Image (tube, rainbow, N blue to C red; front, side):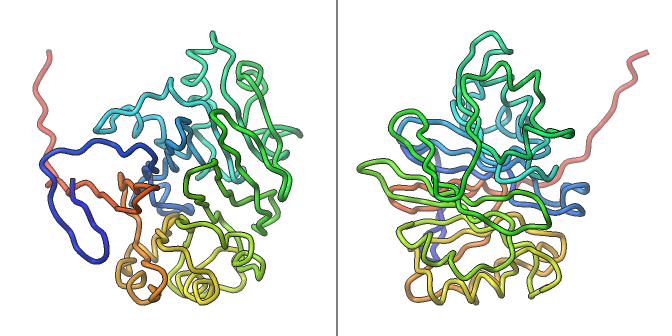
Length: 294
């Protein structure tokens, strides 16, 4: 595991999770990055104020939780949140609910999601699974949802290709406020709504502006950070074009004197208290060898 902060990187002999942190179960997004798994697409694990949760558990979320080092326990999850219903954000919501509830035998945990994820003719959160969890809360713009351990989350209305979509702001007394900006076109009010966040994870799909598509680009994020000044911002939900273009160089360009911007990496950990950033060292690819079984 390497630590990166303020432009410096160092190798750590041992690593344990901080008390309050997020871990990227994937930093990829959009269809081509998802179907090729150019970057993982499992969403975000968070441990905050004693509460464990997952945001946007897309393809591979449960797998990356179970394979995490150090270990993460999917049964310890007590909050599952969907920002919207698109499949790169939602495919693993049902299996994580099964894990959270001990296979459906323990009615516990809170699921927070837009109405169109659970109601209507084509819910992504299945009614069968929904009946097993402790509580379901439907998102409304600006309406605080009380989770466990004194943690609250505030949904922030986004605009994204005709589905109900929200960003998130997390708060707990005595702890830093942090947020996630999900898929959306640029919106003037984001800078005001997220102003108290010391750290923000921002979904940016493209390197350059694409006005006809309701996704933020790195150029859009750069403009946002002229008026919004968290101490740290990390970029996730990167599409194939951004991954191929090299997101690190775009992150360096849009960093400001007030805000360090880092391109997210699969498995990256952000300490929400100190804002130190840890990333797994890349391992060399190995060839799979087969043996004859019969």
